[in-house]
Length: 76
Image (tube, rainbow, N blue to C red):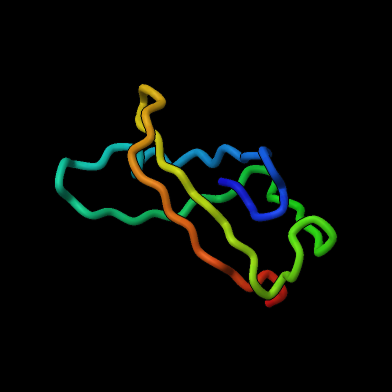
């Protein structure tokens, strides 16, 4: 996981054991907690009502499988 304004800093977010295996050609969803959270500030991230968060999913061999980005309002 990376957050806009934090450059090369990435946070590893492990998936729960029940979500670590996904059958081929199947859709899946899961929730995961960010270990020790992710402190952010308006000074680094900019306008907190519109912060881009990027997630990347890697397999057991550290090969990128998918990535996703979305703008979030972190003031709410």
